[in-house]
Image (cartoon, rainbow, N blue to C red):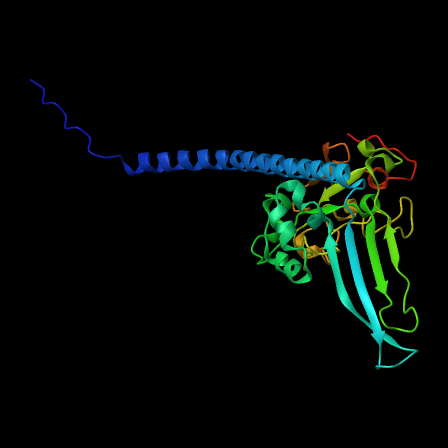
Length: 301
């Protein structure tokens, strides 16, 4: 009669090492897949943010007859003789407030409370502490590890939105008019895009941080496709495509720089469509789609 063998109580060292090796291989295979899923989700969320910003612009235009300006400045001053009794010199006192494109569209992204909060100069200054997920690309790695408030991963196209300022000068008790009132609005309506809103970039992704940053309440938080210097297409610091492929360490400031920790950047057109631009995109095409009135309509897919 044979004696039954004793049951095994544990893995051998070799078997344990094999299992560990298999697990390590599986993790190595899964991590890139997980990262791809995460990147795809971030890209989708950012595209949705851009689409919502375009809708906000449309709704703003429907109510105000113009698209929101890249920045808006309003001033109202009353002048008095200075020194008292002077008939040749005056000084003015009053109010002046500057507002960003991002501020102007707040009521159209369900942020009417913040809009009311920023109605005064003092209130507006508090907005520089406010973070809004609507204004951040979740895949923007440029701000990681950097402590900033009111950051934004997007920039409106100054060539589309223009600017608005209104200066009111009240003579007060001065014996002469110390200044002339001024009012200039260069923002367009949706029908005022010569090349067509579906062919023109309204908003683009950018780096939230780039050796410095412009916060969303800043009146400089835009990119300008009209700053042409030389070359064909014109070389311009404001063109988003010229910053594709840069890293945070390689950029000089955050005015107009694209979030190029990625290999592509997303741009929102006036019709609400969002399209990706790769680092190797033809710069002449980018120039055309960023310029609303050059008469050169580019096909961009």
